[in-house]
Image 1 (tube, rainbow, N blue to C red):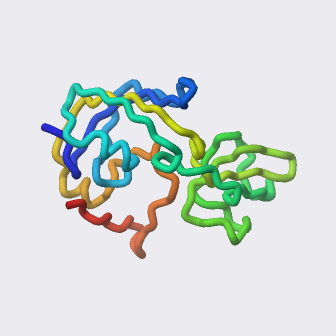
Image 2 (tube, rainbow, N blue to C red):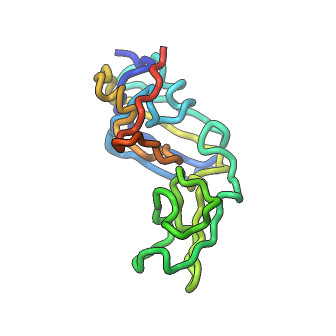
Length: 179
């Protein structure tokens, strides 16, 4: 079966910057929903028509990957608002209560620096502003179930930079169907 606008693919990859430094390596196949929020648009576009066993090389400029770095998404917050076991690189869905009210609440924030009295949180994806090269191996392709399409994701969060909004029941909305 070839990749179509709504299917499930099992992928491995090696992600590098333009200087060839390995940034991420996915060694065991992981399933992603094509046509949902699991993959970047340029990756989905590149996969179209390919079959299990195929490999492809893609070059992604920041605009096609995680966007340009936006220093307006850096926030200096009081240290006491965070857990005692705080480490650089930890991620948070939104900012804790009592933090900057102007900070977008629908973002994932990463701890970039920890000081005795403050924590620097970064709402940019850790790879924002970086052009990427990705070598992808397509291990399997299958039709997506109605439930998977309705969820819009298989839960793989690597490419996520925003928190999925929920309705009153706590359920994410159904994403639009691709035609």
